Length: 124
Image (cartoon, rainbow, N blue to C red; front, side, top):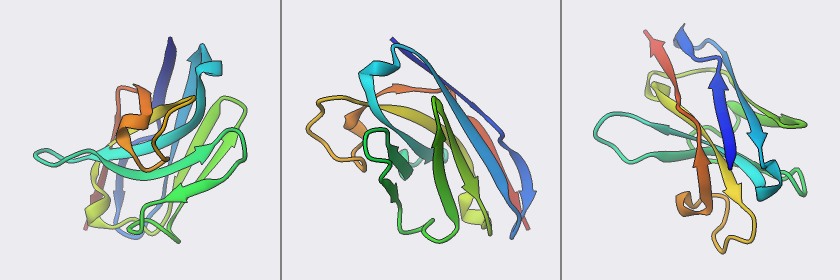
């Protein structure tokens, strides 16, 4: 099993920054990447960003390109969020992407393990 834990959420004013961290533990050899997803009540969980552990390649949703940055330091993955907007308010989840999955980094079914989530609230 893979365990994932998020930290760093909170409340910030629009235009501000937050830094989310995801710590992976357990059988991390089962994953080949980590993704960040977010969800607001009544909506589907949506892709935010991901990083490949094999190549270091990064992937971003169009809505966060140029504002968010994902990086990795061993088993810690950081999502740096700048120029935050009201629409960024959500619960943010980190997730472990399965090895040997057929889906790409943007596909939710490619991810087999999820953290508990951390709330990010952007206020005006």
